Image 1 (tube, one colour):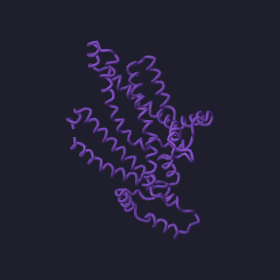
Image 2 (tube, rainbow, N blue to C red):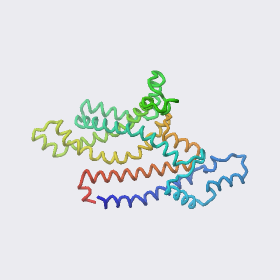
Image 3 (cartoon, rainbow, N blue to C red):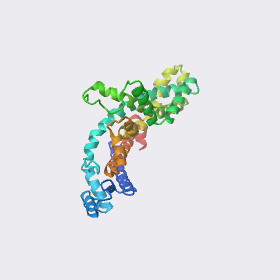
Image 4 (cartoon, one colour):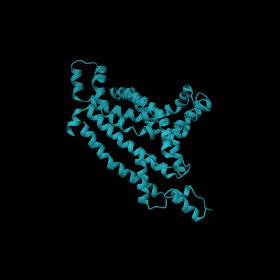
Length: 317
């Protein structure tokens, strides 16, 4: 197991290097230069050159890349071109806010998806299956930002049941009840956004398992449908779900960009959107690289979990 994990980690290193080069190159090819966000048309050329020198933008692209990577290896993502604040400190303060929003929403969606997916798969073609599948189809079709605005209008504006902006009420930053009051609406929106695809995945896996020979054997031995579903089908049906769970790691940081922005939640979402709007390239590159790194890490976690759950995979490796 340790040898396999080490092998996967070593394979991930060149992938991270390639991704970092791609992220940096994309920013270099952007239609606007980073200096455009810090200068005005009436500035003299000398002033512009001084600003470029201050941020190292007067160096060739490959030197800028190596300087950027050197800082990242030391945990320094540089400074925002707009706010002039440390990107690392901004990320450290915002990532926990995103996690406390996305994590409970995803866990709740996963639990509901397992229950509803099993029910739909076990009742394929019946009324329950059609209702659950219809809900999934509607959920996939509805944009999360539209659903968020509908919830804000109904439950926040019309009924006044929940706050519609921010993470805390001003002056009540230490109140747990106020925090959960603000958390409810965006968490529900994200749960509904995550749920449909997970239901479809569990349903498809359940239908596939119900057609296997071991189900017929259990039926021949007189086992009840519930016993077969929850004792035998459940474990095998959820094995492919390990891939989704592992690959969901980047979603803890990047899975709520739109929802966070709509609700004014102080997480990574508004920070990333403002960076794009302000041509704040160091921030954009940092978040892109961080997200890509989480994808690779999630893939590694999925492979490790597969080896733990199904030893045959480890033997094939």
